[in-house]
Image (tube, rainbow, N blue to C red; front, side, top):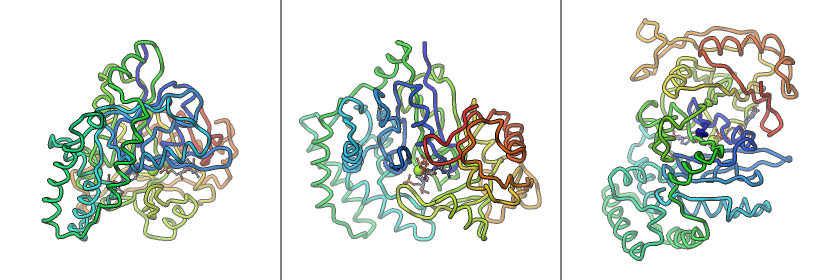
Length: 421
Ligand code: GDP
Ligand code: IMO
Ligand code: MG
């Protein structure tokens, strides 16, 4: 009996999950997203071309793959439709390659308005949401008001949509936030119609039956563990369980059917949006990471905040996810750095701690260990033995600290730029 293997982000998102899932898909017949929605932006680079996916799993470009949007995902039909058209423009017919869980919730036009109104009302305390309606949609899910993909086929769909919309209008009136959904609502209903060509599935049966038949399934996380609703830097988080446990609820598989947990991290750290980031750099080195690493949001285009690798946060993420192996991305960005730093602890109020705190104060001071840079271009390396010694020392230190093997090392954005040990 097969188990679901998982790829998920261990930092604040954008670790490179899209690339890794695309690389691993030939080993898996089925790729399934289990949480998040169009707040995600997963970049794939192959054949000299780039592509960003938001809702569709990153296995979609591989021949004969099956791609599932699981029940834990929230879907904006308009964004999904745009994405499908862009994929099909590349000559991929995805009608039979994409399956959508009936239990996935729909993001309504008014959810987006509520997201925008709520963020605007927060002023300086804003979360820095991608404004895709994620928070309000998950609120309606847990509040038991939501509309699901399976409801699209019900005779009462329009009435239920209208009832929820007017409920949202009531909420919006408290914000005094100007909005107009007329155009988006037209597009939304057109996109809902177009969704009907895809198979709406009871995803929990589909996934478990694949596993029973020994068909390998890979779960693709969105966001990262430090953005998790429970364990992230609350309230500066997203509204779903981004962790390994989210695979169980987001796909309908039992914990004993989860296999490998592959945790991805960048060789440094980034964050987009507000909230604590202890190793953030506000200097020229931070700028350098952003410029060389092209650290601009794949969904919103916002510049990402950059800083050194944070082992306090990384070890925390390894623990809460039960990571079985690590995947390190983007070390090539630091090819020409003299010194590379890793935070191993924090100093808070004069005390040293290696536990991630309940609240990160603004003046948290990371305790760093310095490493000499490798000062060589590693982008063309394809075998672990060929990495410079300084680089291998850096890898060995992270492995010792986390207690996990780094099994895959990505050395560039392209599919081919990868070293698998
Ligand atoms: P995701 O949200 O986790 O899928 O990550 P994003 O796609 O938002 O951001 C990762 C960015 O880094 C994308 O622009 C990728 O093309 C790029 N990338 C991925 N792996 C590497 C790598 O090893 N080196 C470099 N230089 N870029 C990479
Ligand atoms: P991928 O899957 C990076 C961040 C937002 C904001 C917070 C809440 O590409 O790694 P939301 O839109 O969920 O209400 O935003 O979470 N955020 C991400 N940051 N990568 C993502 O996804 C993100 N999805 C949400 O910037 O700080
Ligand atoms: Mg991203």
